[in-house]
Image (cartoon, rainbow, N blue to C red; front, top):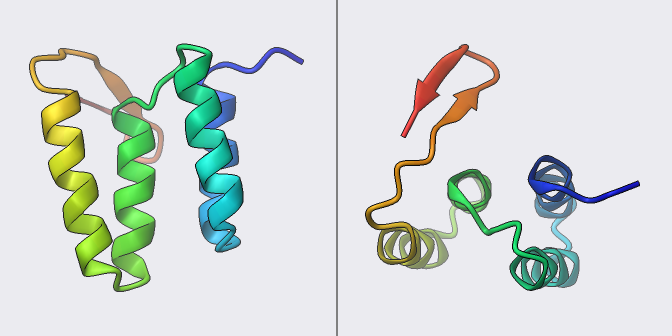
Length: 87
């Protein structure tokens, strides 16, 4: 199976849900190494899961990192649950 951004993001979400920090780190690094991200969805997954776990400092750091790293990008991603397109 070929890994793409969708698969990486699903794996990232699972590792976050399982509270597997090593798996999250390795997936994030592999995404970067293979040119698949992290993208806006990756950051959204990380921010949401950290927020749910009440990890405020980590959440704030991710929001800041996302704003710096993705500044000026106009990627569109479908919101699967709501069918909306977000920037």
